[in-house]
Amino acid sequence: MRVREWDPRSASAAEIHSLVETVNAVLATDLPDDPPWRDVQVRDYLAETMPGERRICWVAEDDRLPEGESTIYALVSILLLGDIGVLEILVKPQLRRRGLGSELLAVAARRAYLEGFSSIGVEAIGGTPAIGFYESLGFEREYVETRSVLSLDTVDWAALGTMAGSISTGYRVEYHPGGPPAGLLEPYARAKAEAQTDDDDLDLTPRSSDPERLRESLDTLHRRGLKPYIVLAIHESTGAVAGLTEVVVPAQHPERADQYDTIVVREHRGYGIDRAIKARMLFELRAAESGLRQVQTWNAQHNESMLKVNAELGYQSDRDWFEYIADVAQLVQRLEPQ
Image (cartoon, rainbow, N blue to C red; front, side):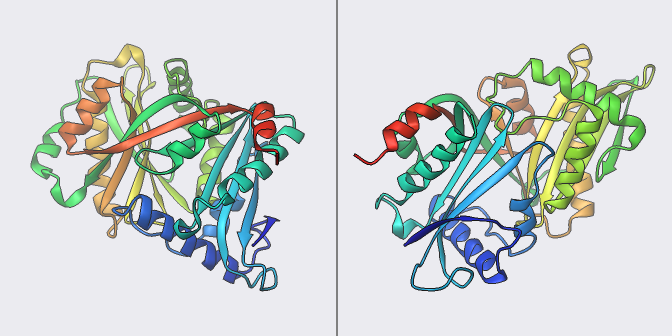
């Protein structure tokens, strides 16, 4: 087995295909109801990052074959952003419990330490071996979200139409595939900035909360093969963005979309905005994405109001997602060969 730093930009097509096979083997074991990945814009998905952010990857591969032609058995990547490194490790299920995950983590932690980062964060999926793996290495649980999944073939579309029209007078709902127009970027960013002050998330996927950063974020999504759909509630008398909901359809698994932010600005809560914009989004997705079958969303367990809205829309709770954090220096020391 050979571990080496790996750049998806220069990787061969065979390597990308092998990586997709590993991703799908992990999904089949850990999340068997999730759709498999397609070998579509996977290189872009890994290579593209926001300005000021960097993703560094390493692979473990069959050392009997030349680089570029070998089978990829595992991947570790670390996204360096702000003051934290965000980790992801994938190991083919048949090679787990052999020390490979710890070896890859040691490589990534050592690089984070050399780059001057003091913390590493990671998401781990409930009910998978990742929970025990990270906790055994001293990662501390900081945040818990529940994933819920909506199957479009179970939606009560008549009831959903009532929800979509239930917003109070004084507001209008707008649909913007691809992202909001330039004239709405500033009020859109203001709405997202307020939400950051209400959130105790670790910010492993930080929001863009200024207009230029928001524009860059949308451009990056497109380059990664993630098609954004936006529905906004506009306060008609002021033109302010009172609420927003974002869904992204990935080229890598277009059968299942990912819900990003749903935000209602504090002073506009209580007017049925959250329910109306999420219902409208589902109608637009059904029309725009013929291959879409499901939408998945994540919510903090204490966010009872959004959990209630999702239940009314037909979402079913799936499993918990845990965010962990570790001190980089301590992690490097713990992972050093004895």
